[in-house]
Image 1 (cartoon, rainbow, N blue to C red):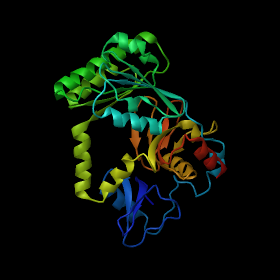
Image 2: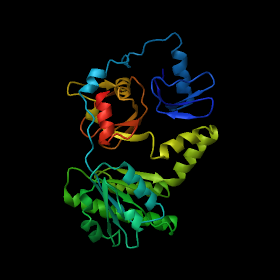
Image 3: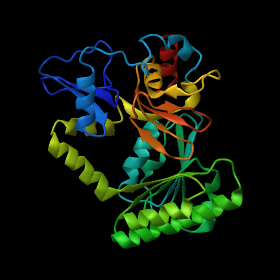
Image 4: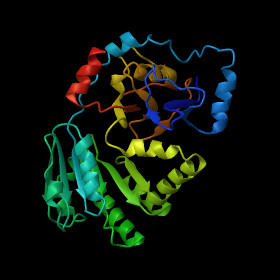
Length: 331
């Protein structure tokens, strides 16, 4: 129904949110639908256009992609090597989240001069944790952790310092990572995740790592104000943020392109990719290119030619677990 938006949930009259609804979930006249779109005008235009039910050529018929998806098996992701630079009051929760979501065989290395709670070093049956008690900003410490070969680097600046000192800590860490990665000459470079206080620091961080790898900068104030703005416009959206932040239930995942594309495919409409995701009871919400460019909920008529490194962002249940993979392979 939505050519320029993606429906991700239903809200019943009792206020209960169903995130990633199934085909047979029902919304009645007192309920609401939750749609990702650029603005309300996009949704209104879609609804107006659908009066009279005009077939959308860019969206395949239901069931038409079943055979194609049988040729695109779900694959268990390879284990991840994650390095955490520093330790602060948010690190313990971050470790818990990584343990819940990291694929089997993953390794977390924490570099911190200070103590790390024993419970945060236990790990689980899927993931091991190692602590290197050294200054996280030193090049020698990063070399010891073989940071150039990591898939991800999470920078945890000291929380007891001011915003400028915290940004300085993070930027110096990014510079050291950039130096080591450039010298290693590897095909895959670490993906950096860092929290900064303002857009100037963000621009510096992105400039330092430009042409080397991808970096995700979280501007805390922007993130919080953006969420508050949406919730203030519609208080029911608070439930959505709660759902997305929980480890149980549906979460956002980035899936390899070849779980949606066969060797015979050329350009595909976004509507086709959405239908292919629906075959696995998942909701496709965007495309991440190998270079890091992100397209959120594009028009169903937008076309994509996907290749190595590209990923589809989906709203789905845990998908790396062997049990869930077997269940989906049989459906």
